[in-house]
Image 1 (cartoon, helix red, strand yellow):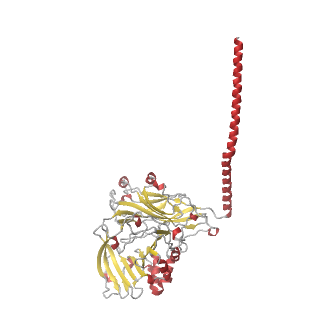
Image 2: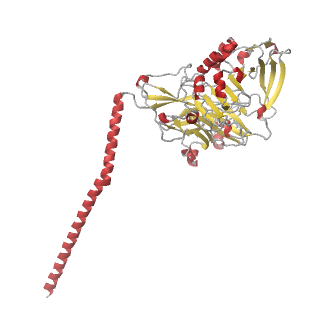
Image 3: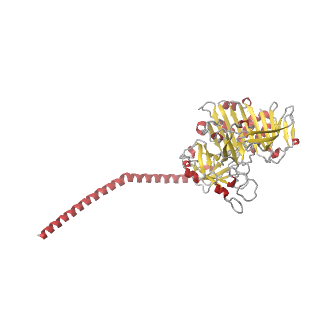
Length: 575
């Protein structure tokens, strides 16, 4: 088993070698509480439980990504982001093989996952770039809020041979910002990677860098970002240590590497007359009110003057993962004028459930994933200024969505349910007022830019791929991520989930009976009216038309006879 721990010290904080203490199996960093931490553990199949090995024998690659719904600072080189929740990307070892990993996912993460089989519950993402190798055959998503089941599985199944060290690491996952699990049939190894943001005060989130058992490998890096020589690269400097070696003292290091993911550098407004400090672009997401049955997701950029592409060959994109209760109409987004009215450029990809009429209770697939290109503010918006506060306008992009009919809650769930931090979230939460609360994750926003030819991004020791959207671009694409700035209803913690209150039928028997009788009466009256128009009304009109024709003929004949009599009278008078 191999362990790799990286402490990323914030800018402005020096690294004192005296704060690093090493022993045969432990490294202690005195300033660890102020640093962001990435931990990576790699284990072979022989070190895993038999039930996991049995499933992985039929898997070519499996990539599991979990992202917290709490906003966090993502320093370089850990800048990649995903919509909050559980993402699964899976490719069977044999094409079209029936490998069902749903029982394993339910065992690891939650029995409430909407996952019955790969064929019915997973979606198949399109491959827009045939050259890109990091794209799986199947995709799955669930808005999972916590990793409680996964932590329990680790503590009970995997941590028995490591005493208390592994259990402490499993408990620390409660504070992680994201967790990655990777397996491929070539390496025959499973890698678990977790990232903790800087500034976490809870002591349980900070575990000591220590070998779990004798014979394991532990590499520790205490690094800090440096100014890179090339725009496509990330440069790191600090100290590296291999714990347990004869010369286990920290050694200074300085290295750089091409990176696929970047943070946007702070920019000054070219139109702002005030001397304000550099500001990085951010966004907030919310549903416009009243949402109705066709809610619009509004993405707002508070400072459009900062929304400038990092390169000339860049386009702004949004990547969404929508649960099955909410969907996007691809035909609606095929109209250029409609797209322009929402400040959208194009819908580049839409995979998953796309039935426009089916209610949610008959949908078996998890939902849908969409990649949209967003329009950027025109120069007139960027240069418009306010005398007192500089640029005054916000730039808002709206994404039109549609709700499915939701199943009425049962009578025994007629109470308000509030999700707690330690309970897994499902797609819906029933309330007592005849409404269902949907939890919709915020999208991930980024600039997608073309990179120079010849860059080998695979040499990045912190490279993160198989994120869903990266497989929709070419292999030499760089992503400049825009961080979210969403606040929850109390203005406290940043929560990257938007809630929709959807009205549904009350579960009472009286309400159901009234709706059923009213529907039956309306259908019966409508059907009777159609029959009357087709048969009874047509026959009556025909009879009335025939009678009117006879009357007109008789009147014409009578008038004709009177004319003849008048002519005869005139002739007699003339004689």
